[in-house]
Image (tube, rainbow, N blue to C red):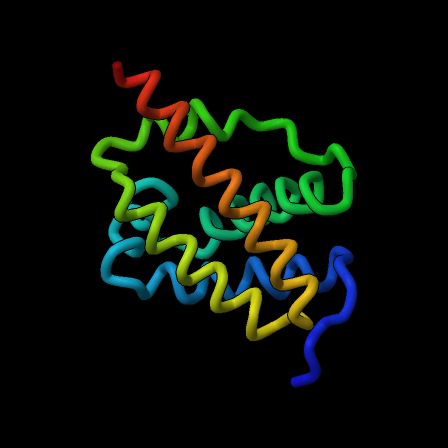
Length: 127
């Protein structure tokens, strides 16, 4: 497969589908996603659409996402730094596999900032 050399809805969708395919099978992340999203394809279709809207808003400034990721993640019982570390590894691997290096780096930089902000927010919310 040729690497994507642009960020658009098609390439974001490819990243989301590839990443969550891996995350669902991952021994660290899979159980969390199964518990929070579910096992069914209908639940996953909704989740993937939300995440696609989120990344579209982050990378393309589309403003399609209107959720509250901080509150959502703070409610996940047992979510730990190890989960974020694993998420970043898998997300980065898929970004590098699908995109030219400059664009993969842009996705990874945004993901790193998000993971840090979410972890800081969760730590504050949990006291």
